[in-house]
Length: 398
Image 1: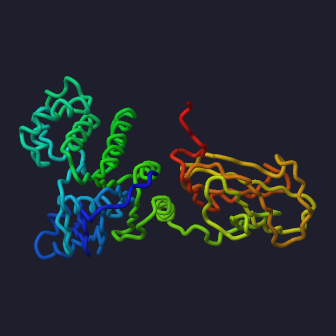
Image 2: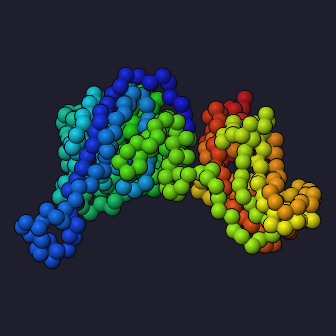
């Protein structure tokens, strides 16, 4: 994540906004005919997609809207863009706004790509003369080549969104709204989109982005807003926002008391983290030491036992693992009851982001082990200008 400069004036203000829809409970044609007339109202219910949301977005910031499916993030983006009108509350914005909210929105299927460039740009506020000056750049950026003169109804979904994105980013917007379109297209085009958004950030433009990709939000955004059931449950640091999103998606609070299986000789009951001063922590900076405490319950006296841990990215990729056997450590015998074993990482060299810790204990490593998966999540902070799950100092060689 790149930290932006001091934010500018407010360009979008959302004040107590709610958006509700009428949802029919009779989905088949037979149901609808049967319930015509007086009974029709009984088979409708109101669904609130956005519920009393207030926020301000400053010029020059890149804001990621996060949430599970149905959380209201796309509806909120459409409200900000003026595509939908709020049921209650008010939205204020200033400057030219370009929105990529739905695949091919503003495109006519029977017109060619060239004709749709002029149509879509006009909707976004450009004159014909402005489009004439920008057309070659739009065409080149889209990468659709000779298909520019083909009716867009014959385009693939990737071609559709590439042309739509090319038009939007060439309208010189003050505020760019993007809803999941960066997931469409090949890797090269996605990278081109990311580079253009990074350029917009450097130019001090404002971007509001909806994405299911945590890594994409961490790379592009300097603020995260997490929604759940139409309400804002977090607004602030991107890494903390992604951690909150994980909790929402998993449907549980992290660090809660874990249920322990019964019947095994020794079991993991929890994982805790400590800094060098012995203070319990939930985050660490790159290069700092970290102690992983694996809390254990022995259901009988143990003359020999072993323990280990692994650290995964939020996508499940293992970054590091170790155990007492690999460290050539023999743990002392323990009586029945609770105890713990501490693993110390001298210097954390993980990249910025969230990570899960898994722990296991057994009489012999890898045999009849009790494993606690994702028993702890922690955050790594890094001020170096690198991305990825590994932290390193990078310079330009002279």
